[in-house]
Length: 105
Image (cartoon, rainbow, N blue to C red; front, side):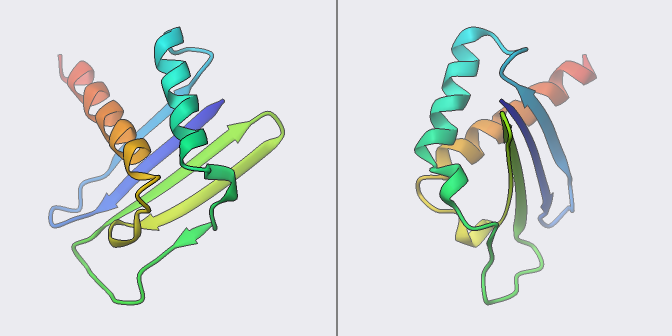
């Protein structure tokens, strides 16, 4: 399973990205990522979860998951993140931050 994540927006307009591949992750992390994708019912979600009200400083999340022959991209406004998606988004954000620290070292 391959997961691509991008967060844009916010006050500073910072962009965070990560690409995770379960084939390259430690087994425990790969299992955790698979469980989070499953718990979010990722492949059953609409492709866009957008708010009807604008918010220039809100974060925008884009998550693309490729599993076998299935590929799905979901775009989500910060104000519309479903509860089932929250742990996945937090995990992906933590992954981005951890990779940034490694790059700076």
